[in-house]
Length: 85
Length: 107
Image 1 (spheres, rainbow over the protein chains, first blue to last red):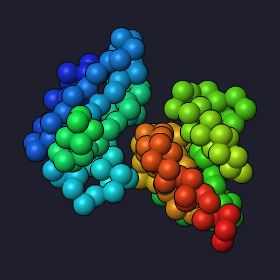
Image 2: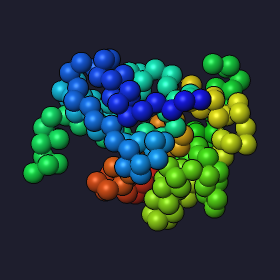
Image 3: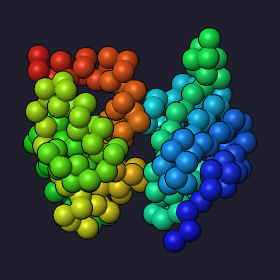
C-alpha cells in the first residue's frame, strides 16, 4: 500500500475544510509518522473530540491504509496566535 | 454495528472506571501512541483495564465503529470516550486529565 505524502494529506484536508490552514510535516523524515497542524475558525465552540472528528471526516477512510500515523493539533485562529506568542 | 458486540463494549466501559484500548498491553505496548497513553496513566498511578486490540480483530475494528474514531489508542473514563493519544497528551499537559481522574477517585 502506498503511503500518502504530507502534501497529499494537506490537499485532502484542505479540500474538505476550505476555511482551514493546514500544514502536514514529516518530523522524523520517515514518510510514516506525520504531524499535522490544522487551524480553522470552524473549530470555535467545538471540543477536542469534535475537532478531531472533523479532520478524520475530511480524511475519509485514509486511516485504513495510506495513513499510518498522524499526530494532530486542531486550533482556532486565536489559539494558534496564543501559542506562537 | 452488531448489537452483541456493542453490548460487550458497553459492559466493558461501564463496569470499569478507566479502559484503554491499545496495541499491545500496558507492560508491552506495540505502538508509540499506545505507549505514550499507557505511560501517562502509569505516571499518574491510574488503575486501568488495558485491552490489546491486536489480539482480537472483532475488537480492533469494532472499537473504531463503537467510538466513531478511526485510530487506536482510545481511552474511556466512566463509560465516556475521552479521546486518542493527541487529546490525552494535551489534557495531561493542561492538567485536565489529572482533574478528571481525581474526581473519579473522590466520587
